[in-house]
Each structure stands twice: as structure tokens, then as C-alpha cells.
Image (cartoon, rainbow, N blue to C red; front, side, top):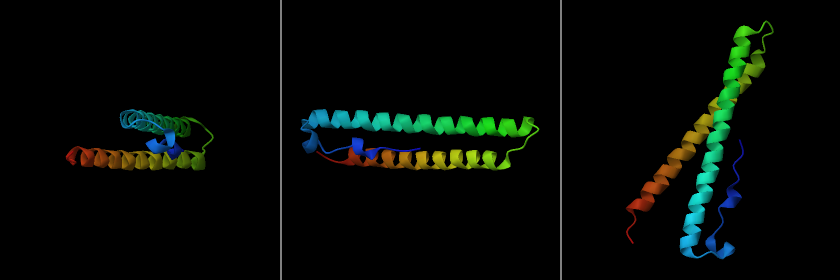
Length: 98
């Protein structure tokens, strides 16, 4: 899973107004988070397929199955950490007084 953080650029570099930059930032973060979710979901499906193949196939691919399970586990943990950080950042912004 790769995350492209270069999509989050300061508004001054892009020349956006503050309202445009905040909305476009939200859109970009939302798109990035959605892609991460899809990647995690795909890795979970691959791991499920590997476990099913391992259980039903006469040829046992222990290493491939374990690698797929570990990739799915690590990607899910990373996704949950990113979600927790985004939630904490959102809550901090909501506590700010203008």
C-alpha cells in the first residue's frame, strides 16, 4: 500500500483562496483515505483467498499464505492508525476557537 502525501500542498503554492484550499484539501484527504480503504480491503480479500486455497488445495503454499495474512494485518493496523490520527486532528480543529 502506498500513500502519496504530495497531494497535500500548501494553498500558497497552488494559489487557491482559503475557502477553495480547505475544500480541496478535504477532497484530497478524502480521496486518499478512500484509496487506502480500497487497498486494505483488496489485501484482506487476497488473504482470504490464500487461506481458502490453503485449506482446499492439495499443494500447500504456507509461505504465500502467511505473507498474505501478514500484509493484510499490517495494512489494517496502519489504516486504523491513520484513521485515529485523522480523527484526533479533526477533533482538535473542532475545539479551536475562531
